[in-house]
Length: 258
Image (cartoon, one colour):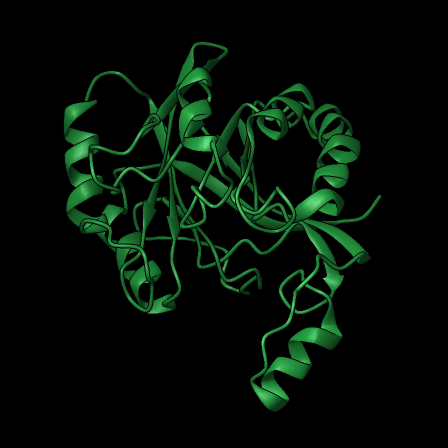
């Protein structure tokens, strides 16, 4: 079976890439599951209910979110209406939204969840290691394989979670930094791993934002509006192949243009 995990979708350029490429890639490569991080899909910060609907209609099976989950006003009252959208699982239990999604294809049940890192992150989240342990234990017997997204800043924290979950999940794939890492690999017990899958959106940018105002902010520290850039749009994703046991056989990083 094949899983395509799409890294942080940034603004309309990223959404347009998903709409154009997901149906094509799904058909050409025989993809069973498409999972996408959509936390920056609305003008580069947060997501809306309407955007969730558009991404799901484009062929995304599950939308994951990160530390910008509540950036768009009103989304906290919309998220519960989507059964294939999940917010980070280690946010406080009082937060609205689902802490995981289980989707099935060809008799295989895939658990999808996101854990927020805590190193250099502003959001007050519970321990991602203990959170992942607790979720896997609670849902034991309800899934055949699992994708755990680690939405974090520190590569050390991401690698540590990968090793912590090695052999227990199909893949541990990272998001948040918007820059793809060259470490796609299979861990000792056949868990696919990558520190950061990268960004889906304009790469002629600074993390998806217009170059000039970001550079200006570094030069003089004055506040500026960081608009979403438009140049060199690419879809960044990890393609994971796995068998009926849920153990990964192969992982490959993809960078695609229209």
